[in-house]
Length: 102
Length: 181
Image 1 (spheres, rainbow over the protein chains, first blue to last red):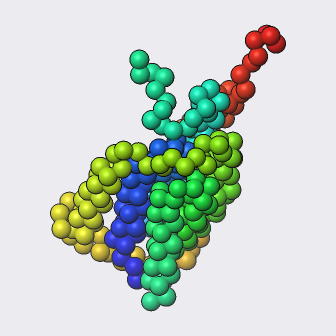
Image 2 (image 1 turned 120 degrees about the vertical axis):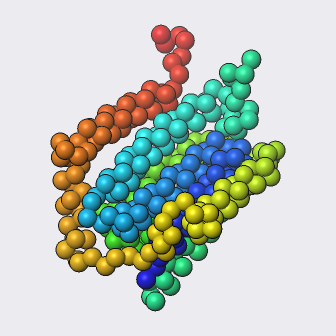
């Protein structure tokens, strides 16, 4: 049988990869994709803890579904912002978007 | 034994494609690798006997979010084909920070830094009867609409989705021409 720590380690690796993407990528769409990786890592943790600790109580799955809903909303709004910014500034590089700087 | 082999295959698939997402210079290939990552995560849900969540993962992430991301990449395509760097100046620092987070999480999970009961992370799955697993979707549906459980967050989630839908339409609407107004 697979111990719980295997799932947690995979989720931790996925989370760290997403964190690196958020820190290091310049393209705003790539940063959004890295955020999706982080949310997926959290969901693996939630479902693993649900199955290993409390398989009779569905709270872990309910929370995972809410994470799914919020991720969908975040992706829709974030990509609409990216398209709108591209239209106005001709760029989706996060460093060049300094409208609020001065 | 077969379960461990499937787990390792899924882990290699998921983590390898996640690495491809953050390192690939071509943004479109990153998006395709992201779809493989979502598929691997759905495989983990199947291994964890959460079939409903696996189906939701396929529908919502692979069916909707990936397509949305690919559309956004195609609409901003000119930026993606430039030969400029795809990593910013602090990528080394970012790599260091991500490695620190991974090492800390590894220490906690491996119980070298005991924050949880000693046997918690090493426990194997308590076998439950098939009825409990088959009932889990029924229990999930009841919990979502039960006034004693999650009906209020459920309704709030629908309002959030509606607000996000209208908001993204408004934000992405093409700007009005001055002479049309």
